[in-house]
Amino acid sequence: MSQQTIKQQARRTAREMADKRRREREERERRVIDLAERVMVAIGQRDAAVTETEKRAGEALRALTEGEGLSLAEAVECCGKTITVREATRLRRLSGTEGGAVVEPETGATDESGGAGAGSPAL
Image (tube, rainbow, N blue to C red; front, side, top):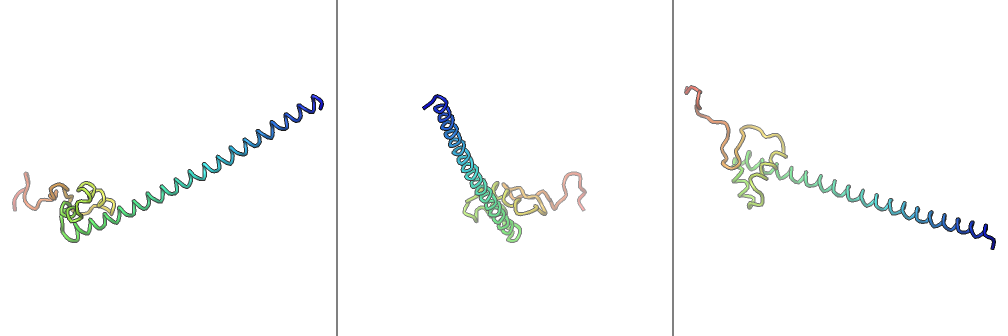
């Protein structure tokens, strides 16, 4: 075998090995991208499900407080204290715009006083 033939064969083998490694890297990259996409889709679906579930919980809390007249603390107690008053406040906000009086979650007091305050004449 001549030196030229040996060099040509060595070059061909080196190119074939480089092509094989390149194809393997490209296939791996495609698998990585596909798996990353699956992760991101699953996380997006989870986030959407959590958002919808929390919105439903907020609607139920709103029904307890506005529809049934419970304070937020009482509503939390009825739920077996599986959530805190703070969490219940957050969930209620997710269910829609807070309407009416602003309720202080810890005390159940509102910012609307029916009586005369300082600087208000009693009628």
